[in-house]
Image (cartoon, rainbow, N blue to C red):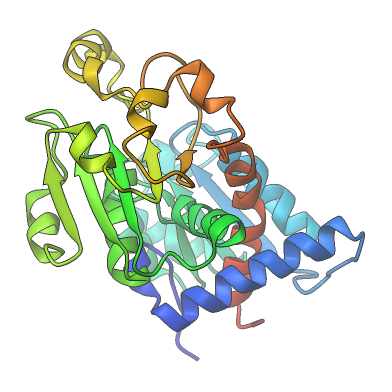
Amino acid sequence: MTVRHFLSLDDINADELDLIINTAIDLKKSRAAGELNKSLEQRVLGMIFEKSSTRTRVSFESGMTQLGGSALFLSPRDTQLGRGEPVEDSARVLSRMVDIIMIRTFGHDIVERFAQYSKVPVINALTDLYHPCQLLADIQTYVEHRGSPKGKKVAWIGDGNNMCHSYMNAAKLCGFHLAVACPEGYEPDADLTAALSDHVTVTHSPEEAAQGADWVVTDVWASMGQEEEQAAREAKFASFQVNHALMAHANKDAIFMHCLPAHRDEEVSGELIEDAQYSVVWDEAENRLHAQKALMLFLLGKL
């Protein structure tokens, strides 16, 4: 049986995405009803973290426990990978001891190399290039609140970062149009933009991107590893805050998302993130748990 990995949204097709999202919604309902699911009993998830995390660690670890399995947290201090062992060797060894592996790291090439030598499924839990697990949660959240995103307009406001890149992939996979608004010099990857030009447009105007949008999303202006750029980025991004004035350009029933953690009154106003008329960020955060449970079931052949 071929091992399936999830390194970006390009690793699944539209039907598989629907299966994962619908399963996540069902898992969420069954969990709320107090029903037990032990589909992954005796299975072990290895969690490799080279970047710090709150939501990713808690959601994967809790999710594996809820499915009857267990999870091992591995930081650079705990592994030979952090002491210079080749990625390929770590993959060969760990994949003989656990059933599935998630990696949160910097360079996307690390998860690609790890997956190449792994005997078990590998999940990209965030790299500098993509954050596909967050998109599963975001898509689930939109489906729960508004139905299918196909044919909708999504506005990405802010940095052309890993989240933006995954939204670009999602535009193709889900059939929505993504309008990206970034300051000059902070656009998403040019090659990816060119490859997805039928689904993505890039502008330097937040108002233009938000005009007629059904779904507005943003992220912090300085991601992990960019802390020294914070002051410079604040100046460049000052007019890119998502607030009620910007949401007025979107459709009346538009919703707002943010992968969190949020810097209130920087990329999003404190008033907007707390306004339940627009903001679904708490459902979005919870859905990391359910979407990732569905993903692990899919990759382990349980769907």
